[in-house]
Amino acid sequence: MKTAQKMVAIWVCILMIPGFGLPDNAFGITTAEEEDLTREFLYYTFENYKIIQDPTIVDYVNRVGWKILAQMPHQPFRYHFYVIQEDAYNAFAGPAGHIFINSGLLEAMESEDELAGILAHEISHVNCRHISHMIERSKITGMATLAGIAAGILLGIGGASEAASAVTLGSVAAGQSDFLAYSRENEMQADQVGLKYIEKAGYDVAGLLAILEKIRNKTWYGSDQIPTYLVTHPATEDRIAYIGAWLQSRKQPGQPTGKLPDHDFRIMHSRILALYTEKSMALAKLRNSIKQNTKDPFAQYAYGLILSKSGDRKNAIVHLKNALDQRPFDQVFIRDLGQTCFLDGQYSQALKFLESARSIPHFDPEGELYLARTLKELGRPEEAIQGYQQILAQRPQYSKPNYYLGEIYGEMGKMGDAHFHLGLYYKQERNYKNAIFHLNKALDNLSDPDKKKTAQTMLGSAIEEKETHPDK
Image (cartoon, rainbow, N blue to C red):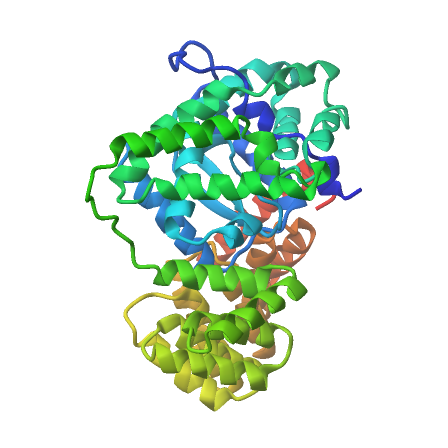
């Protein structure tokens, strides 16, 4: 059994304890305590699951989440949205506004309305303080242990039976199973709150109904394949009935149904299918899509991506050019054509496409990264360094530029800078052993006082994290 499956014990605990209708101060930990719990919760999550770092996907999901949040009153947390590379249908809210959605659930979606529906529901769990109420009830086990329990349940992929047994694993107290009673009230309240803000943000509420029906319909695979979402979000049939009735009550005769532009959704969906879905299934779907409509630019784009990922870059370039023929000014299509040329060793062609993509006024960290890598391969290291530094100035949390800066400085013999950036990279990747090694080397070799101060601070943080999690 995989480690992840053994941990199937996190978020049902937090989301499903009855707290419906209680005022915020009736019980529940403070927002500060909830923030403190986040560190351990995120450690368990990142340790056991692969988080997709693709800026095109992550930025898009965050934009949809922020669009919903813009319609809500001031929130006590800064929300963060993550995508887990996992085929199971699941989405959940962690403590302090950290919201996760599985790539499998994104791949099943057909519109941004469906994504908005799921995110609004999870945001509403946070807004209604369902999480804080559950944590307060469970504090007897200790906050660090609770973080592990929460991570296991919310991330569990084995279905209801494994979720039920997982609470007996590790250090989880036997009495903790008492807190696994699912709450229909919490789910209904999250829907009631979420529906209002879905509509205010300009989305079609029918999207939430559509994705819930897809999740429900997946149960025909058998009890061992029950979507995790159904385990952690009970009363799905009641929710479907309620949302359907809500929609019917608000429907006006002759009222047009607006449709949002779907370009960003289809780009995200194409990348999820081509790059983060099981290969044979993705290939079958994409070949069928191209067969049905050879002029669909997104099908051509996705097929080009999966061919590039598979190493067939010559044919990948053909399909990416086919996509670009249909949408000649699409920044992402141009960028990925340039990236594929780079991976194929066609550096001059890559430079042409990547500079063309850059001319479109939208900051694209992935495009900037490959442009800098191309400049380095073309013998222009100083320009490459400037490019990496510009990315970090705008996206300091993006770890890849630090790795490539470490590489390029090492080749130039600037070992202090090389170790400095490699230390930052490994710290961001939570590889504390390597981070400590490189940051110590940086302190031995650096002369820049500001960089030495940063290295010292990062070293202290890495040592603290290593002591907390010795295996890292």
